[in-house]
Image (cartoon, rainbow, N blue to C red; front, side):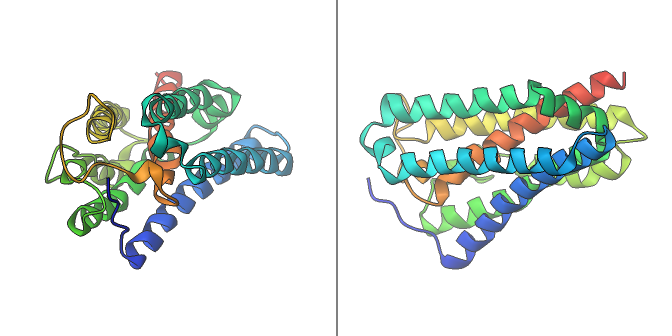
Length: 231
């Protein structure tokens, strides 16, 4: 399986999205800690170190090419680990703090990163870096979630029903994107398409999974908790 690297500008834009998601998460922890009267510096340093360790772990696995040599079950196991840890983070004390202290508008707006990410995916598909199935020309319509987030965020605080609509639709789109990603991969039960989805095998492209996919799933769980707290 041959991988065609993306153009330099699109990779830089992708890294900007990844860094932006990480900064939003760490910044949100800082804001939540201040509002709930925890030590801001200690909590920010702690979550920053944990984030760096998580990214370093994924970088190490990708660098060793273990995903490439053993896509099944190692790559699939890592994918499941990302989903479980993302949900675990959302259900942890940090997820509780974010749900309690951040506004619904902020929690919805977080998902706005999905708009530029999907535009980048479209560019990568045109360049042959990833299959068209992963874009809106195929079966991945996650760009709708990014657009909805930007449109609904200003009204989410005063109209909780809109936040619920976004959360349900956005989560469904995220689940669909996960399914399409799995079925576009080199796993033995996946679709027989070319090119295959090989982002997990290469640095920095693999970051889409632990940061963007994981962040999106965690964001929806936290938003659900926030909506239930305010019911």
